[in-house]
Length: 207
Image (cartoon, rainbow, N blue to C red; front, side, top):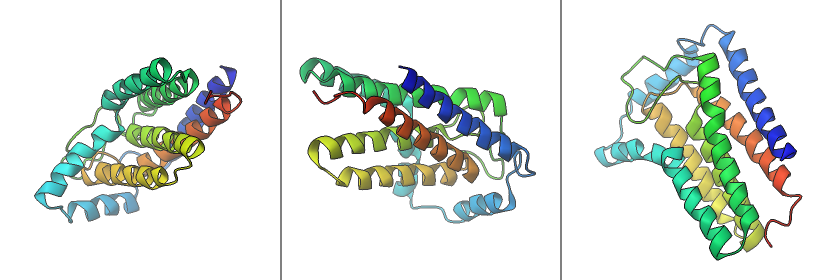
């Protein structure tokens, strides 16, 4: 439990530290020149109608509105049906931690959303950090590592990488995040991923 708490604190400090450093720059509220240029690039390259609809649907792969209930179901199956409580708890801890890390940072740092073009799709609260990137980085790579360890499968890492990339692309395409919000989210997600994996690896979690 202490190791999980340490991982949580480390991820939170990394997120707050990176966000605070960004907040000291001129681009915090209105975006750095390269960030505005990036959002302009996406705005000038609209996708076809069906791909555009895909971008609107993509955030559901990285929000706990859908992922947390799914992890609860998966956790119950692992625990009750397969007799594997520790991986169930591991997945729930990663998911719940990803959810709770995000709002405190948004509240404390309160970065405005981009206002260059109309925002579309799913977005709430402040801009920094990207909760979608925190969750997809931490959870999907945790699942990939579990599958590598138990099944020897490497392909889930490619699938996870694709989900993370498409999620990040959609957040910029929909004009709801600055690029540095995604960088901050990735840093938080990586620290939470490594910290929780380290915390759980001391147990025989596959028995």
